[in-house]
Image (cartoon, rainbow, N blue to C red):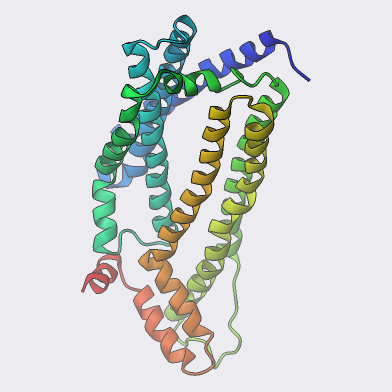
Length: 325
């Protein structure tokens, strides 16, 4: 059932105001927080969050301008229309890369270590520069693309080709709800698992020293959280793909927009698998998994566990020296 056009336009206008305002407020709040800290190393996530808000706000503003230009000259895009469309894609690509940068920091710090290898330190140091270059290369062809591809994105989002306001509103709030549930699951897993005392099988098999005993308990909890932490995103973001498939195959009438939706649905899971691979390859994760496997071996489990716990008890600098040494 089609909804009135004015309702779609009203919803779109509200989102056009709220989205840039939220992005700019995040950028301003991050700038204020950064000025309160003298140690710049402790404000990496805050600074990246501010850049996220700024790029998101600028992307929405460019989207508004490009959409107005597409209404004036729908068949022959001007040079300014090409520039603003290029900025939309460029800023959104940078936004995606910055999200991955924050996720990488959270995944590393989640286990209690920072960059424990030379490769991870190199990635963290040059991530922003490489991200901007890659986004620039991917978005640059839009400056020279054919006319029907220039206005594809500005005319396609938020009800321009989809006139079912019920689906637009429902899919938006379901997406927000899924993200909130996913975050809540991770938080609950961390709080519950870290507070729960996990006893060993017997007094003979456990590590005698109290300090080693605490390390053993901490590593046991982290080994269990390792399973739930990446799995929650797959479980709770999965239903949103159903809405995207409905959007692509049922509501969208233009073949080009269907192709765009399908490409995003392929790229999203592939990117999630890649992020999971990076997470698994982190040296802290490898140490936790290896320690847990050694602990549960029937033979030589205690001696292997002692060695892995000794590695786990190292400082960041000691672990980094062993990884690169």
